[in-house]
Image (cartoon, rainbow over all chains, first blue to last red; front, side):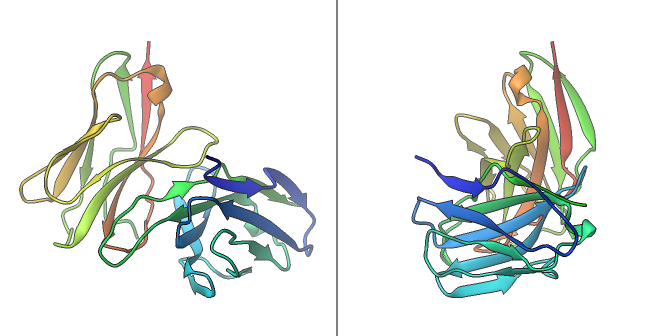
Length: 115
Length: 109
C-alpha cells in the first residue's frame, strides 16, 4: 500500500513564484490535512478537509489555498511565495466520523525553500 | 496551544524500557490521549491512543492515571531506531491534532 504520497520531495522557489504541493492517498480516507513544520518546532495545521468539496482553515492558513475535488487528492497552493513559507510540509489523512478516532497517517513531507 | 506538557529531552539505554511522561491536567471527559513520534526527516508516525483505560499494542503501552491528568508512554525494549521526537497530544473525538514541542528521546548503546 502506498498510503499518503507527497510530491515533490524537495523544491526551491524564488520570492513571488507560485507552486502546488501534491498529496494523494489510497486508503479511502475522508479526512485530509496539511501541516507545516518549521525547524525545531511541532507541526502546525494549515488547512483540512472532511470530504470532497469541503475545506476549512487550520491554525496558519494565510498565504495558502486548498481544494478537494476528489477523495484521494488534496493539493496545497502557494500563490506568492514568501521567505516565511520556507518549511517542511506534511500531508496526512484519516478515516473519521463523529464517533470514531482513527489515527492520522502522514506522508514523508515536501521540503520547500524560498529564496 | 498544545494542552500537554512534556520534558524537552530524555535519554535511555538500549534494551531498557523508555518511559515518557506527559501532563494533561486540563483534559476534558471526551478527549483522547494520542502519541505520535517523528524520526528525523520523516513524517510523524502514530503509536497508540487511549481514553481512560491502559492500552497496549505491538509498539508500546500507554498508562493513563485514574484522574486522567497524566499519562506515560512505555517502549518496553528501546532500540537505537526508537530515537525520535515523541509527541503527546490531547484530542477531542473527531477533533484536530495540535502538536507541541514533544520529547526528544535519545536511545544510547
